[in-house]
Length: 321
Image 1 (cartoon, one colour):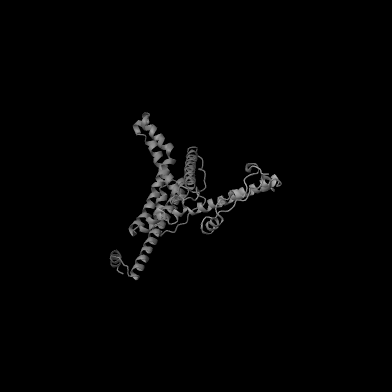
Image 2 (tube, rainbow, N blue to C red):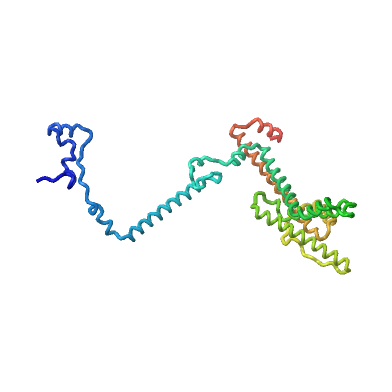
């Protein structure tokens, strides 16, 4: 008694496409054909395929999934950190993408520094010094914004006295504020270092303005005591820590003559500003001397290697070496 094939699934021999061929031909094809026909194993029931999936507790599966997710996240974070460390700040993708393109990257500033001539290196030092001096002027002008505003208002709408004197009082206050603020900034070391954080320079600027207004308060107290016939009060120095700069006797005498012409309350700031100017000039001279010495070493190295240029020969003849 037979049963339909669709009831219990097709028989294994029915799935063989060579079953109706002659036995000898079938044997020949099986040997010579590059495509081997394999009989597919009958599919197992769903219950037999995954016998342990139902018995496995749900909590264990969740723990394994969480562990796998944590491992993947750690790997991704590690890869991102390694890629971020491999790319410079100029990259638009700080997560490390295109890191292989940045391996041979060199900043433009480094390339420019290597290709600069000797004259350009010296001019960079001088330009940096001049830039700091100009920056002091701008910062002092910011600290004197109130005095400048009073001068501007006087010129726009002056009273009779201001019209007759051309706002001389306001002009004098502004000029003194500007000069003293610049000296206080120098005394506080505003020209000492180039490239400091903006927060440090802002603190120096605020401290200079604070010292200037303290100096004005001391002058007002002294003037008030003189008008009342009392002994003028004594005030301590504006600067707790004073800069020590060695100068020759001639420079010291010139400084003393300059300080005698300055009010007593402003002498401390004037002296510290002179010391700061002297120190900045010495530092700039040391930088220029260092650049010149480095250039001399490079010329000697090129001469020893037999690669002396025409410019090197001219400089050597001019220096008499």
